Length: 240
Image 1: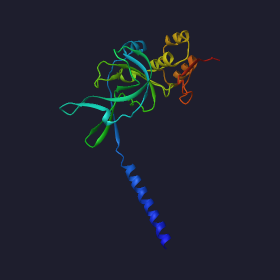
Image 2 (image 1 turned 135 degrees about the horizontal axis):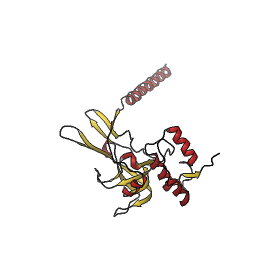
Image 3 (image 1 turned 120 degrees about the horizontal axis):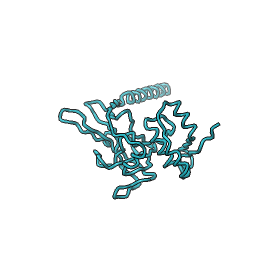
Image 4 (image 1 turned 90 degrees about the vertical axis):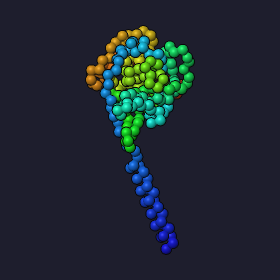
């Protein structure tokens, strides 16, 4: 009888703990995403390289949170501007026109923020651009001009950001994405790079772009490969 009571007690305890766990998970604070559409300066690849104070490959070290977000609100209660300040690990620097050295870690401003509207938790983004993802690597074109936080900021949102996790994905700035990877991440020689950098990668729809990329070059990106060299392999494709 004592064994039966003990077994029933353990079963009841398991049910209670499961209910507490489920209730806790069920009541996780929801995050409402608000997409703020806006017009920003747009740069082509060469303009972007000239405008940027820093061009670097980085890895994101943190998540976007309330405590690393900045939001200005007018006296009427309207949000006038916002940003997030993210910590990144500097992997490689290709341009630095600042009057200071850049350390191994860097604070970078992006056009995303998390704030509260009463009891609601809100994530603010611009033109559907998601925040930098923790653990992922990017090529960033950074500027010290017009910075809300005083830190280096990504130039014109997605225009100055190249995500390396999926180099073949469709992108509004496909030309900038492909040329950045060719110039900074490929093992091509200067002649091959120059030939492709003169080309134009226009957004023509997913199937057409995929065909164009296949005819131009093949992209191989193995994030789990040799830890000493995490560079994208770009080779001329043979066209049958």
